[in-house]
Image 1 (cartoon, rainbow, N blue to C red):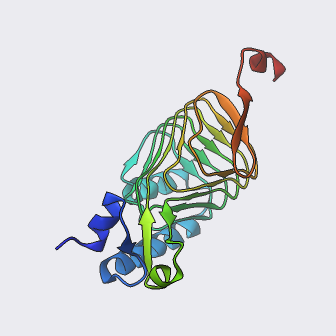
Image 2: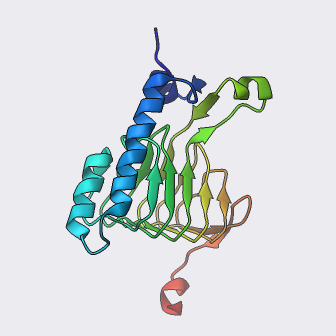
Length: 193
C-alpha cells in the first residue's frame, strides 16, 4: 500500500491534514524551526550547521535570516551563497530547489502545496504538492509568493509583491499578480548600477 508521503512525492492527491506520519514529521520540523529561530543572530556558524542538518542539501555560505519556517526541511536544497532575508516560508510538501547565488528579500513564500477546488475533497484534508525550482543568480523581491510547480530560470529578477503562478524564463525581469515577463535583462542593465 502506498503511503501518503509517497503520494506527495508522486505529485498526486494525498492526505496532509490527517496522516499521522506527515503530522509527526511537520511537528518535528516546526520544533526545529523554532530552535533555529532562537539561535542568537551573531552565531553564524551554529546557524549554518543547523540548516545543514535540516535541509536535504546545502552549498557553501548559506544565510537564512530569522525568523524562518518550513514544513519538513528534507525536501529543500540550496546552492552556494544562498541568502534569504527575514520571514522566509517554504512549504516543502514537494522538493524545493534553489541554485547558486539566490537572493531572497523579506516576507517571501515558496508554496508547493495546492488544494482541490471541490470543497468536499478539500475538507477531507487532501492536497497535492508540486516541485519548485529556482535557478542560479536569481533575485526575488520582497513579498513574493511562488506557487506549486513553478520554475524560475537563471539570472532572472522577480519584482516585489509578485505572485508567480507559471514558469519564468531565464534572464528576464518579471512582475505582477499574476507574475509576467516585463523585459529581458540586457547589457545596459550593467551600466545602470
